[in-house]
Length: 509
Image (cartoon, rainbow, N blue to C red; front, top):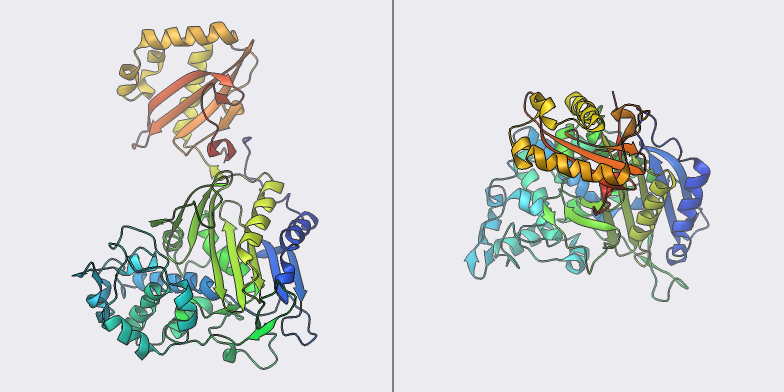
């Protein structure tokens, strides 16, 4: 992408565009829930909101303040709480989980004892089997009942730390560990440590905790494609509540996404609640999720993984997307955000036939496409820029690379001997012609950068262009460890595959 100073990269996403994107994303599936609420957000604020239907079936219209159950989106709040306690020295995520929940010591794999850590449980790689169907019905089970199941010995479906399996029961053990070290119900700790300090006043773990008159969406089910709906009572809040019980609003989730997303910014907010490093840890993949045969479109997503209470996608065009869905009988929800731009999408529906995830995914992707959002923002080191300028001068003058030996690591002149490098450059120039004399500086011709240690730029020539790539080694005094000059095919070297780095935004000092 073009080089720029530090602009507002989301300024082009106006309300009219966002509203059209949101309405288009939700239109075809809205009939599957009595009420839906959705928003496209930017830095925690709404760019567009769409609220439709009747959340209680009593004639009251849905609004941006309607409270919906967010189900498994709760896991991100649980993860943040666990990390906050870890930062205080109360939890060791890499210690055996049985240290905090003794019953887990009875877990076995192929008949043999199997040990797991809190980190494994929180990132769905502890070896416990996928349990969504079972977990929905067990949300309200008493702690004593679940403890008895655990104490009797859980059977693992895979060796710990080897495979991804989404386990509600496993992540609920984080709640038991939190209770063990605090002496308080985990819901109280989540409220005290994370929810209340962030001012998320409409986020609560049970419907009964809201004041009388609060606009609470009821849950519904349909078995005839939305022609009729049957009210579905709230699933109870018991031993598994810490992984799926929360209720919330569009506004609170917009602020929550912003809180997590700014961990990647130069000025992250609310460091006193949870430090940015821990929030980045939460949003970094620890378990690889196969992208085929599931929710991920392999044409759009290169890779996916589970962090702590959230899933992370590597979108082929837009880079890191952080997300999590929520689903219980009567409700469906989804939140996702793009840390690079601060743009997010959140979608609620009060029917489990309504699938909020693809709606939010389409809304966010279309919003990012509307502003040609960068996949990442790269700020090259001063030494990277200086090396590029010096090497550009050498190439344009067709001088030997050894003239800049002070910039080079020892391997550079040995990896490709100077006579070979000179012959290759001569062949390239014979094809594209001599570099044009009035091309401006190398920094005016930057094409992209993979990271702070790398840079790609273009040298316009009489009949085409040369593409230069430099990559430095991050020592105290960075040195060039590789440098290439190739004939250009558009803005990439001939024969090279276009990749996501073509959509990185390079910011200069």
